[in-house]
Amino acid sequence: MNKKLRILLLTGLAALFCSSCSKMEEILPESYKRNDLPFSVEKVPVEGGTITLQKVVGESVVNIDPASATQTFSVGDTLILTATAKNGYTFINWKRDGVEKSLQPEYKFCLEGKDVDENGRVKYHYEARFGLDYALQVIPPIDKVIPHELIVAMGSYLHFGDNPRKIDSSFIVDHVRLARFIQHDPTTTYFKQDSTYTNDQHLTFKLSGQHRCMAESALFVHHWGEIYEGSGIFFYEDSKANDSIFIMGDGDWFTVYYHHLAKKRMEPDEQYAHMISDFQVERKESFILSGRLTSQGIAECRIGTCVESYSEASPRIGLYNGLPGIHDIIIYDFPNEILRYATTD
Image 1 (cartoon, rainbow, N blue to C red):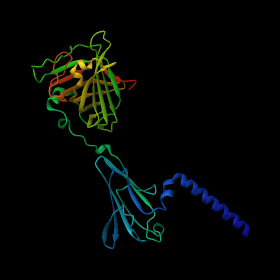
Image 2 (image 1 turned 45 degrees about the vertical axis):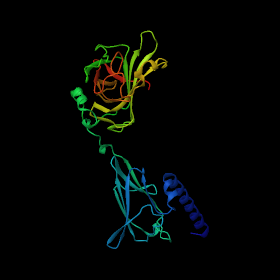
Image 3 (image 1 turned 45 degrees about the horizontal axis):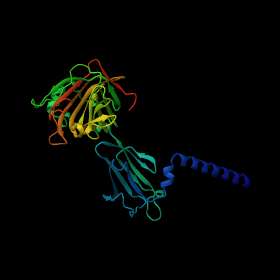
Image 4 (image 1 turned 90 degrees about the vertical axis):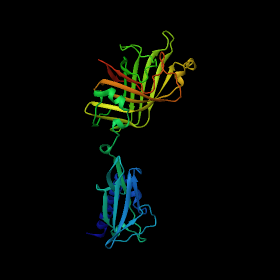
């Protein structure tokens, strides 16, 4: 092969190699950004768990701070990276400069010449990558959250299991029925609506951010209709929760349980709210909703609440459209009705 041909061949191979490098950089950009940086180890996400770094020295193993920027190594050193997931997470993999290296919590490797620079610095960036492990998600049993009296009142309508369906959506129903009212203090005169269907009432239930057996927020709205017939002023009660919302169940059957804060409001405005002391009071309740998920919504639904406390020491208990007493239990059901999926939020 003559000299000119050799030069052309080498030039072509170099171009091909650079082109390949360019393609590899597109595929693994993290590698090309990080492999000239000093040795570093991090958790992804940072709250996923803990990591340890050890160096084998002869017959002994030395613990090293993974965050230390002054650590130096030698060719032939054996390093051991170990990831331990915290509760709710699972270990997924170890990556070096964005490239998967191990599917085990422990990643053990020996440093080669190409791994260490002349100053004893390892040039790679390691990541312990964690993910949420829903199978490990643990929620408290219902009797640790909900009072015994409400559990008994809901009885056979509770559905147990650790594999509930995804139910984080909005549901509405147009007819509300009081199935049962359990009065703790018989001297109060809380108004109980008739146990027949009422066309001027409806419920909205919205669950958001479900992660297997837990959700991030819940909203339960009871629309009672007009305060006075023909007044055009409508009466609502909003009940909200943003923490400790638990879901149990198996197959299509499920039960949601948590505590929420309930407060009344008016629409279109609150010009008469100052006349009704109930609107200034916030009520804490235990809440249970159970049923069977279908393609249309929640069938065979039951809702139970139990009053835990009030924001005021002596709220107006009882009277027409007043407040239930502390420890009073209210159960709603919807015979032949379904909490259907809402078309809008």
